[in-house]
Image (cartoon, rainbow, N blue to C red; front, side):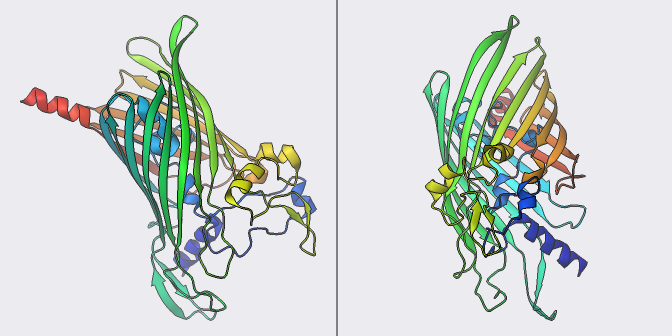
Length: 397
């Protein structure tokens, strides 16, 4: 029973369980410094799926390209040096409460000539086993809720130092297995199709007579249709998100290099307005029933607290990455979210190791303000370098 209750809390907190109306009434006190978070369906799309970026404060829009770039910025693949690679990542979720919730991620890419690349990925979120009961506690069914997203992307150099990328994503979210909800409503899986549009720029510059690679990336992700889990409820926005930021990578000497990455994130969905007791809007212009395009553009000016609140909706990620001889890496980072918008604040640390064909990345999260589903858990990513595999075969032959 305890396991069941814990999982219900997980799902409810995740914000995906059939929100009848995301315009929950907000008091004046809440607008003056309390919580006014933005909720969407399928928030698992925003979880950092790989251990490298997870160890750098969830920053990755302009970091050096790798096999996991599809999540952070698909345009980076055009500048990746290797011909082909695959990454497999695993993240336990809420391990302090339950032991069967996890996030798995598989991604891979293939260069097509020098200027373009294709990539694909699968993101799978499992919520374990849940027993459903009626209002008096009788068992009415058992199910394993899960969600997944399948991505395909194309990236191409548009100039010597500039590239663009576009991704197509299919999203499937099945949280009840068709079990009838209270009031006899029929439930069903939620489905959506979305796209990412991204650009990436990099150029070698000189700082203090030291050659440094400067990069900047922008990715607008999850531009797609709303999701509903019943036939009688209004559809909810998926997490359309703007991610942008710069990075600097410098070779300190022949063996040592250091990288700095900085990301800004802003959800491009309506902010919940302020309602009076009669249900009329008295502050803010966010409309949960708005269309996708109007909701995206309106998200920059619809907060009840004006532009001060709009600025609070931006999250900040900063990460450091040190490499020794391109074989051993140490990483650290910090993530910040304003207290009225979710209050996620945490440090991250991690390490990486490359050995011939294989690479291994580890990440660990340390919360500073509140508990986090990933605290006290070790995330890992395993990478396969097919170029190194081919070179090894040539040497053997």
